[in-house]
Image (cartoon, rainbow, N blue to C red; front, side):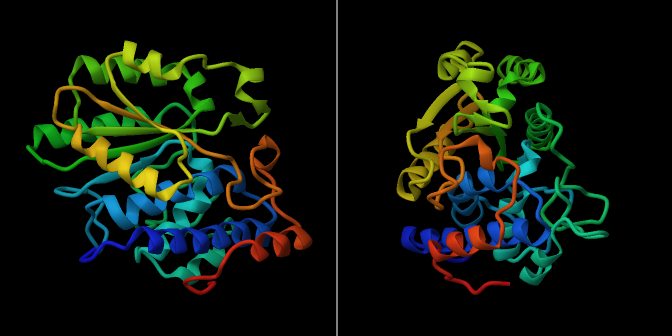
Length: 284
């Protein structure tokens, strides 16, 4: 983008993205609104402020920043941001999860949706994919950065820790991995399902440089820390960014509970949700 939006403009975009999310999942009565709403600021900051990407979309991604979504079930927020940043027509959001749509429940590559480089949703795999892409950039002397988002419940997957060891051992210092730490997973709070204890200490022990964002739904704080993470690349260590968010952020009756992990609002709930969200870019 030629000129980056201001923080206030990023906040307005986030409001519209949240409207897109709840309308998309409501229309087909399926999808994952909770994590999508919680990660809205992250995706908006990434695509409208931080990422250096090219359009039209090119699958090889040479000489541009790359992003991979590991916890692919939060596809609604990614689709909205891709559309709102010009990768495809915003009107296509109305096809979410419908038969023959390019906007599947989990991101897929078969139909050639712009912005998507790998199918995802099988938890634990995204970091490995991102590290492979980052190593290719190093081999090609490509100076750009690879980003990946994981869920906190996803840290219970063993492959994540194999990848963590691999990255530190091979000094893959052109990758920034973010964990959405909302404390919830599909069956309940993390502390009840399988407590992660001190996640920061674990990643540091695995050889990563770790930074934390206390409130990942605060755009000012998030942009500052993502910018800081970028400044730490190229110094011999992979970068981990732990971002504390509220599942369902932005809608009072959805916030802070695992119950909205994978259910859609009914008509009344949709109206309540939209009443709390300003329409800033125009609904699709």
